[in-house]
Image 1 (cartoon, rainbow, N blue to C red):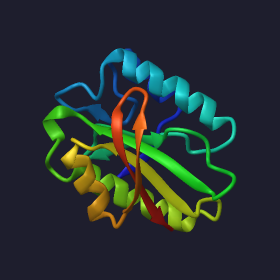
Image 2: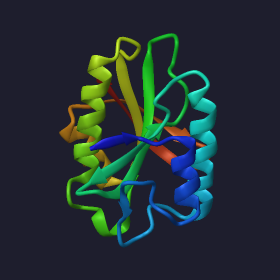
Image 3: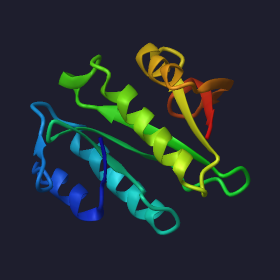
Length: 156
């Protein structure tokens, strides 16, 4: 289930606490510097698009995060997303379910006509998540930080 992650939720996560009424899973969602970066990113995106981030919650536990990585693309109304799952929950379908939930949200939101994402050419697990959710490969590029990436798109 996706639950909107607000500024105060990121503040709690950065303190190592779970936003009420949830609890944290048994492994960190992300290193503190990544959580801080995601909080800043969400604060910026929230100025022009909301929700700006979601907590992935299963059985009352926060097990991951999913968010736009940049504001909605005004030209084609696409929302570029990224996601991560706590290490102890990886390989259990969590990311696939979260992306499926986001696709349902996007289809019901008139602002969004497509979801886009990028995966490292070596990240087979994330490629499988997107493929399972009917994203199509639309190209490749070289990212300054991540190197070669595959570009994905889902028309909503």
